[in-house]
Length: 273
Image (cartoon, rainbow, N blue to C red; front, top):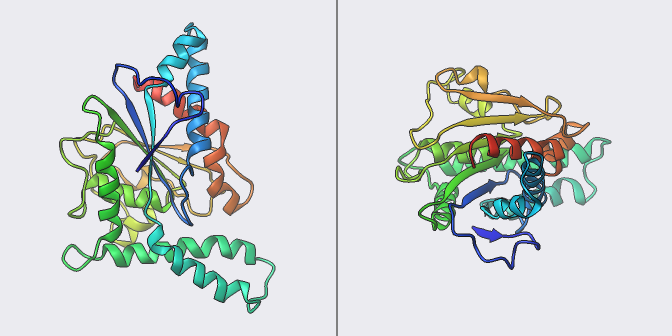
């Protein structure tokens, strides 16, 4: 898990107060370092603006935003080669004709990664759990600040992986001694997974070390689903947001959405972070 700072704050000495790790977990397709950079920078920009509107000086607002550290979880390298080869054989050799190929090429990687993750996770005895093991390793790298707090921000299939990890469904799980101030999912297909496991209305409750959960979705997103109706024994808040005009565009649009970044900045302040 690599820590990335914005150019303006990269050379500033780390402040002597409690830090907050913003831990991003991507969904489908290849993942390169900095995939969450635009969202991270926009969150900080709105956070500073909101503080200035509350009466803080620009210097005070900028100082307060230094508490946040960007962490990125990588796991998709396990499926990158499979996906690349599939798309080449299916589309790029000219064998498939169709006006909607551009949509299918956005959906197919999702399906490959979903099916791979299900196979990889398997059952508790036979699953290789390579992805969850990699996620656990990345998370352990972020637990470096004893006084630090953590917010997990997970997209698409990444939200499913984060859910399995935070809720402790396999041997690789969030350590009980570590806490997560907020679990933020966006573009999440989680209810499809829990329903496929036989739980249309899941009986799970928030783990003691996960304080809250919000789920952000664009109703036009072809992947995102409402979570509140399917998790009645815990408090999850569904928040609608317009992030794009097409099913695929809406699914990827969260990462550069200003309303999304502003919402997260407001919630960080409301949560006392």
